[in-house]
Image (cartoon, rainbow, N blue to C red; front, side, top):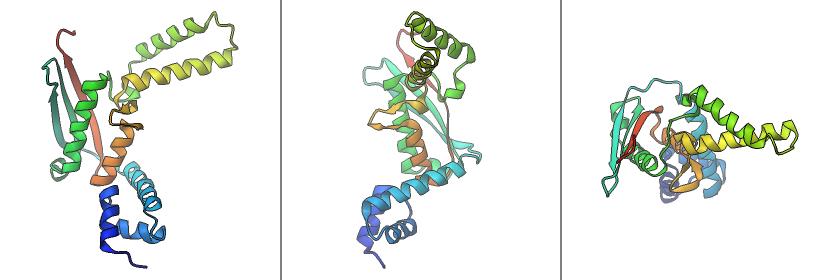
Length: 198
């Protein structure tokens, strides 16, 4: 069955996928827009996972200075080609990252960047808090894991809730953008400056 161009373009606008992918998704879901969107998202995530092994050496350095001039952010985001670095999707993604960093003050890009000594120190603090609780060791271990995950969610950019959509993390936004632009994207590094802070 063939679908009206208007419907195909509506799905394209919602998903950011190509026209042919939208046609196929509508055919596979018998014209159900919601199911087609979900199908494209799943395919996009699979595609993004495959692309994450490719090298990314082009990109942009995004900047943001808060209106009161007291918070500033620089972020380096890499992609595979200069062409993608100039696309609206990529530029918007970089802009959203600068706003996220300004608002949420992450310390690292990813969990893997958290220094081992800091992670161990956090674990020690949580264990000390629970040592007098009388809870079984297995329960204490689960609580420590939960608190450590919360620490990552607050301090690692990719783990943070997206300020515009609490149902998404920044890593979800990254995967969506990779699926839209069709290239690997790496958030390389950032710096956040706040007036008067060391």
